[in-house]
Length: 132
Image 1: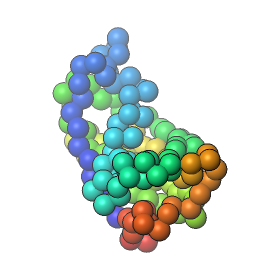
Image 2: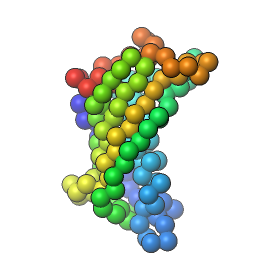
Image 3: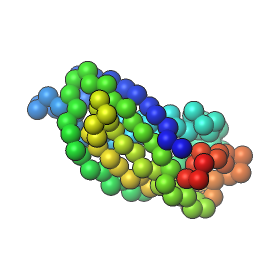
């Protein structure tokens, strides 16, 4: 399942070269992952209120094309790997159908003690599994 998020590049996201700063792409990816969770029924506020956290443990990103002010970007988020307490998303940022950046993002769940934990059953959503 591929989830689609869209956004428009804002002026404060651009650097002195007039294109999106490379670190800003990490914010775009985070925005899209949170939209993925929300749109698939994951209650993140409740998850956090119970002491759990979803953290990013690794991001490998390849930049292919610059984005500039007012570009309309599409971000695809797709689960590609799942384990008991972690998983991996493939995320692609596109501009007019052209690949701007591609990232492999590995996440993990921590409990209130900061230890790895399986996703609690009440928060388990089918969309986190690559087969769905």
